[in-house]
Image (cartoon, rainbow, N blue to C red; front, top):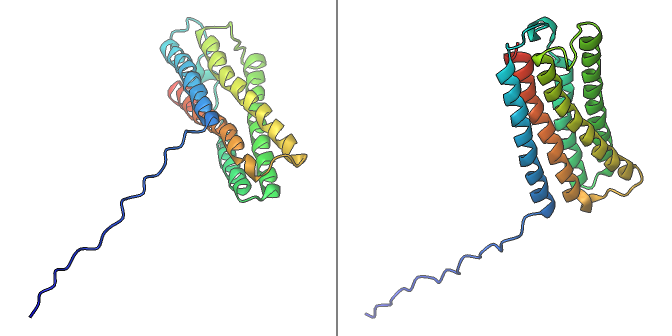
Length: 202
């Protein structure tokens, strides 16, 4: 009888996934978000530090109301922009345009609600940026966020104009995705502002 030696089958070496440079647009946007996060942190800390230190009124508890509707609109815009990107990735430009326009509408409603709140605080409650420390820190923090929403709406509106002209196509998904990161950042910051100013700050 002859014995045969079984040799194990040769396994091919694992295929290494080539390293790809990250998107310059995303790197730039994440850098911007990091810098803006630091600025917002300073304003939030200042607001928290000066809570209850105003010599004269009005106080947050006396004048602030929970902006529930505004918050729902702004946070919902993160969903609509996500759906818009999903449609663009699949090449469905009509659905992308519709969800993108809805995102802008929700952001505009939020901004209009902030303007109405300020009008009420200034003319009905007598709270201005010079009234007391609360007024100064409140308008600074909420105003900083409103400014970022305005900038975001400007960018979103430009993309919408290009989309209506037929200039936004599936191959532009990466660039549009970079802008969506900024909008998600604006929404996340509002969650912090909402909790600090309207929940814990009262």
